Length: 248
Image 1 (tube, rainbow, N blue to C red):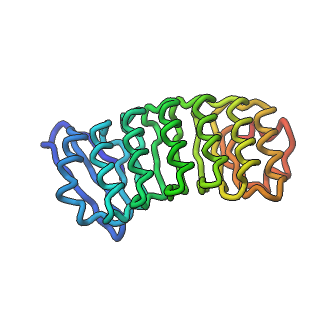
Image 2: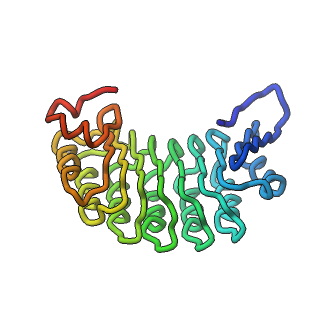
């Protein structure tokens, strides 16, 4: 559930706790409300926090770091999409993600105003022996090829266990695809889904990745390009240049 803003009610926090999931609705005072709410709801947190579009910034990341690195934390999924975290906020989160106590498996940072520096911080996480991340969503951020190159270096690491990487609408070209293809060749054992929809890889960029799908060592079975995600079985039946422009 996403957070909502209203000018007709006083600032408040509403927590929805169903099973192992907690969703916060924050009105008007994003960071202040989140920080204050930790003392109220931390005992109820189990596995999932959804904070999509809650007007959060770097200050919220400082509070979340305490949760992520806590010995008592059992948080496995954190959705911070559509918040103005910027690179400085992600740097704080990345430090906590490398804690041996961190149990986070899914991190969603779509549309958080992130640039190359965020990729540098997250690369350290992905290549860390202590990282438990399996699903990373960085869609709708201006990472560009320089950022993807940093992420690709982390994917090459034998310690990287990432299974899903979402990079839709990140201004990626052939250069970024080349780095990703090289990374998957070096460490093909984990990544199963790669979303590159709404980028600019060109024919040659997609050919590199699609060719890798024929490698029996690659575990990648879903590749996103153009406007949709396509399973490996369907890709094998399509030929260039047709499938590059396939729309769902």
